[in-house]
Structure formats: C-alpha cells, structure tokens
Length: 437
Image (cartoon, rainbow, N blue to C red):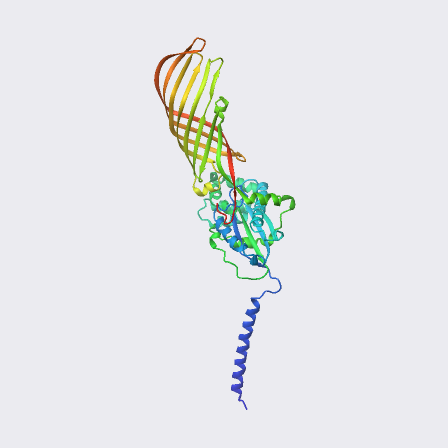
C-alpha cells in the first residue's frame, strides 16, 4: 500500500507536467490564425517634394523604401497573402487648405498608380487611397521633440489654441518676425509631405524586416501613423483623379533638360536675343546667350547691328537639402560671365563701329516660377567692358562713310540688365526597374 507522502509527491509531479503541457499547447495555438486574422504590416513611407505628387526615387530616403517595396511586392506568393493596402497621404500645413487637401488626394492616387503600374499582379481593388489633408498632429509632435525651434512654447500655444488652419498659419508667420515659421518650413515641413503604404495580411507570416532608415524623420512616425488607420475614410469619388491618367503620370517623371530664355528688355528695343541654360545638379548651371539685331532703318539713317555672345556660370544659393524642395533654376544666384562681339551703331550722320568688344564681371539674379514650365528671371551684371572703335560720318545721302578717328573705350560698372522669360524644356524619364533616378 502506497504511503501518503509518496502519493502527494506524485500528485505534485503530475500537476507540474500538466501545467507544462498546457503552456506549450497555449503557445502553439496562439501562433496560429483563428480564421482570417487581420495583421497590420509596417508602413512604408514615401516623401514628396514641395507642391509635387509624383513618386520620386531621388528624394530623401525614397530609394530605400522603393527597394524594399521591390523585395516585398515582387514575391507573387507573398502578395497573395495581402488582404488590403491603404495609402495614407498628407500635405504639409503650408499654403491654402483646399489646395493641400487636393494635393494629398493626388499623392494617394499617385502611389496607387505607381503600385498598379509596377506590380500588375496586385489586385487594384484592394488598394485604397485614404488622403488625410494637412498633418497638424504630426507637426505638433515634431515641434515637441525639437528643442532647437525658436519660440517653441509660443508656437505650441498657437497650434493648440487656434484650430482654424488659415488663422494658425497667419499667426505663426507673424510670430517673432517669422523666424520660427522659417525654421519649421525648412526643417520640419518636408517630413510631413508623405504617403504611408500600410498593409493588412490575411495571416501571420515572417515578413522581410523594414530597414529603420526608411524613416528619414529622426522621430518615429510609425506608432502615430498606425493609430490613425481606424480614424480615416476613403476619398470621395469626385475628388479622385482618373485612374488611367494617373498611371501614365506616375510611370514617367519630368526631368529638366534645358531652359530657353529671352530678355524682355531687349525684345522691347527690337533686339532679338536668345539664351539657353543647362542645370548641373541642384546648385549649378551654365547659361549661354546670343544677341543678333541687324537693322538698317529710315533709308540708312539709323543702324543697329550687333552680334554678341557670352557664357555665364551660376551658383544657386541654398543648401542641397533646401534646394531639393525647390524647382530647378529658381531662387537667388550669383554668377561669373564673359562675352564679346562686334557692332555698328549709327544715328543719322554719326556712327561707331567695333570689330570686337569684350565684357566680363560678376552677376546676381533671382528667378521664380510663374506658371507650369515658365519662370521669370531678374539679373544684373557688374564688371568691365572694353572695346576698340572707329568713329565715322555718313555722307552722300548716307551712302558713304567718312572715317574720323579710331579709339579705345573702357567702362567699369553695370554691363548688363535682364528681365527674362524662361521656358523649361523637360524630358520624360521612365521609372524603370530599380527606380534609379
């Protein structure tokens, strides 16, 4: 007969074994899906340039995100386990509210168009654009985490107290002569022009790990982005851009090739001219100009004949990061120029001819966008002009030129003034496999 202490000992041993077995079975069942289980994937963040809605692999850390999409969506078997893809897009709180809401909608459609074009095996009816408009909530989080922002407490007070978008923007621009707003515009707003591609999977699986560096923002946006998923609605049909049109737009990216210009001041003076500027990267460009008026007026009483050309190297001001948000060939610039040519200028009896003149110096200018592919440029140059000339009188009813003297002339001061109309000629670059810029 078994004694009581041994009996109790065996009962305890059995209880421990049952507990271990229950734990193993619980863990095993916890790892299995119960029917169809929605599992949110990590959001893939794409950033947009200022006032743009095209997917640009060369901007911020988009190339890394697009490479990860390539690894993820190229796997047909893995894509088959995607239940839905939501695209949450935002615009930075800068400018007109209505325009920003429309821009956020366009960005959602641009990302959807890119996914459908690049990965045709994805079910387009499971991809949902969800534009969110201006991202004030994320802006506040960035401000809280940025201790270098001037007047940070006052900025937070304005954002918290004034819920009306336009009023809030106006007060921020007026605060401390606009210094905090410029800081926000240059350093924080680029992180708010984005679209998060969020996936829900049919069942759990080991997914490729998303590199942390995909988030160029130094403050993690994942948690706040995922918390907003359940608070959004799909864009209304009347706000969406045509699907086929958007597929074509995101399949190609405009890349500035050259800019063709004319100096409006010379045009008014009936002096035909043309300039061609070629951008080199974001901060440099080379500008070439040619002027060719060749007129004889009023039965040879007046002569305006000039052939001249020149080259100018320009440096566009601003850091590389700031210029990434600007249109090409816009903003302030400094340049070095040199040129020359020949001329024949006559007003009634007196005239001057020069077989060669040269002008060189430094220039300063400013250009801004006035329409799609159209810029207006202001430019002034200061330097030296040097010429050898011959002075003559016209005789015999302006048919004979009588030479009077030869001379040299040197001038230090302004040598050119321009108000130029600029037309950008772009080339379409297909976003091919690998998405190289």
